[in-house]
Image 1 (spheres, rainbow, N blue to C red):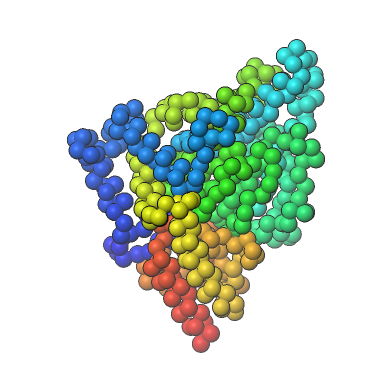
Image 2 (tube, rainbow, N blue to C red):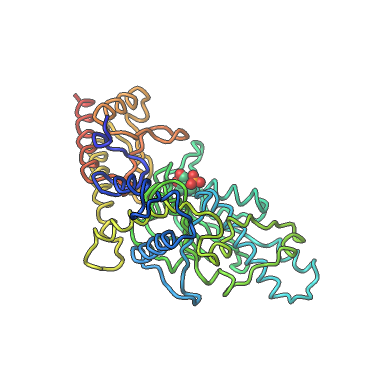
Length: 420
Ligand code: PLP
């Protein structure tokens, strides 16, 4: 089929018929009449710098990201290595800051054993609410040892081991002393399990993975020391990862530990391409940046800004309203047919981005028939993640209202057929 004949409930940069992708094919051949395509121009050219600045500026406007060089300001970084790369980056970075604070506390003449003793108490708090936060916590354990990882809450349910809830904060077990906490980590939206935090949790040095709900609602950036996410779900094309990093954890305001000290304590220094201070110092141009991906992200952001012309802050509120509208429409139909559809996660933590549900309690044949019927109508990408099965309708920004409406209609028709 033609691209315009299908609706895809998966990751991607922009809904059709917006001009982003059409424009993208043109700039690949010839960018702004330079005679060169966008993947040919140097990432250090004035054109590339302008693209970078435009995308950073658009993101700042959309999410109201604080500016300035003071500790309250935030840097916007573009990295490679995906969300998974940042699972490692956050550990290297925050551990280094934590160790530097110990060195400062004990003085430079402190014996190794005093530092060693304090280091043993270091904890990284992880809220495990789905497959991705679980992976992030496992990566942290791999890098620094599981004795340093505190699983504040584990949302896996009893025997099934399945996710689908966020335990009440009263049942959490954060590290006893804030002094020992290097970071508190959560995944705002669990892509595979369809669980989303209604609002950010609290915790010292809060870090959020927003890979799958970036730019879908306002974010209280100031509550976080860092927010990161791969661009490929809601922001653009695969190839860049965005990190919004507080100046308060960058070297001008927070010293990093010397690599020798880290090594003596049995901790390693991370690869330079994941090193936030290096990337920040070089305005994301430390090494070759895929500028085409940054351009796409900038165009997608521009679309969101023009969608919200009244300058009401934060500008992302307009997209948030659309995301809510699409999600409510679809959950409304699913809830109206409890004999056919079961939404996997609990109601108060259902994701607006990834709607995970089962048909007839997970009847393999019924789910197969559902998917085949959807495909015949050009409704694609509805198969659940291979690790959990079932159906997943991703409701990213690129999924248009018309697409959601068409899916809602199909859900209704399928349910009626099952009843009849
Ligand atoms: N975090 C979340 C919430 C994700 O959905 C994903 C990928 O789907 C990742 C992290 C991993 O991202 P990447 O594949 O870019 O490493």
